[in-house]
Length: 61
Image (cartoon, rainbow, N blue to C red; front, side, top):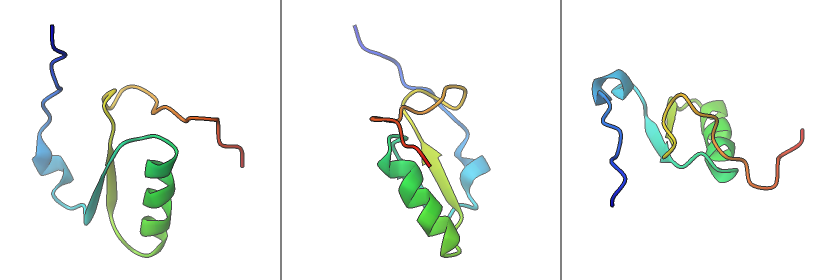
């Protein structure tokens, strides 16, 4: 049995300069620094838009 992927309307993200695949610890970190540099960034994660991305090892700030 295969897991079906969620289909989304990509036109909502057409204004993004960079799309990051993966919401683990590295994805949001890269998105933060790219955004600070002036880029419009979107993160896609396998769990979908309604679920909190996994943070491996829990980042504390």
